Image (cartoon, rainbow, N blue to C red; front, top):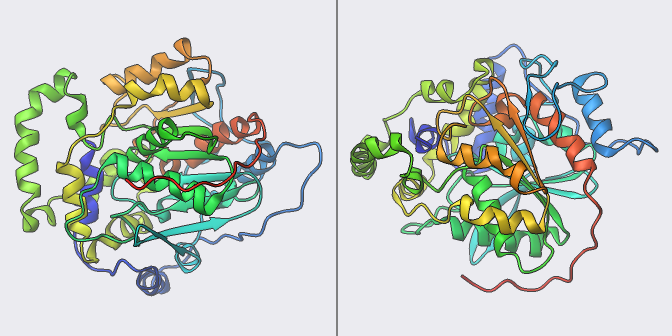
Length: 393
């Protein structure tokens, strides 16, 4: 069930949701460890005659880039060691350098790094800016990388009694593009972050979205959106029971352990102490558990199946799908739909990632970069739109 990954965020309330508190806790943990990951965020000098993505890919792979398979529907296994620290970002540095944007009176945490055409990273259930630790460094060598904590997650505000919906997150994304980025942007999302990007692209009345990258796109804010799958139908009574249990705060806060993360990652070595802190860390803030429960038990929101034809007609779309995803399996209704898209919509490119779970960007960043960076190089440049205020939702 797609809600399970986020449930790990509700376990062991130990840290404050502020970036400063994350930094202090991580620093204490790092002093007990023998090594740490680091990253220089400085943008390199331009290399004439070499596409932006190709330069970053060679640096990330330590050579000419890895990853086998190409074209729509390819299966990628890659040639880069998945356990290697592929320009992984120091979480301490990430959290220290975050900024705050005020949206409708609420604080939204975000990060910006690098120079070049803008790319916005949108995390999935229960995650935050830190979940892109293995991607920000590589991408920021050639692009201006923005990463955002959706309202209710990470260090962004978690207002009491707030009703979280996919549409609200999509509105947040569009306003962020209009007020902060102010340029046509490629949206990169994972899980429900992908779906929020799809809804934002569908709702954008101007040329704010330059392209769309979907990493194991969710079928809804929770699995209630895909009850056509016979497996979900059989489990529907159990889903409603889980809804009830999750609304009991003490039960919700203790349901899931580290094993949940292991179950959704194909590369088990990627489930390290830092990942556990990324998922669990923000859960101590006031309103964090309520935000999680509201998300899991709320309405599923729009389905990507209904939105993708119109979205793909306006923007190029890259779909990357881990074939070992237990939440949105490739043989489920959403996975089957996206598998067939390249044959129906010429603006869509699909790559299957072999042995990869629900979070490809953190599970096997080498495979993701090998497909993402060359695809970004193919996008035409776009002129900046004239900023206008988005209507309040």
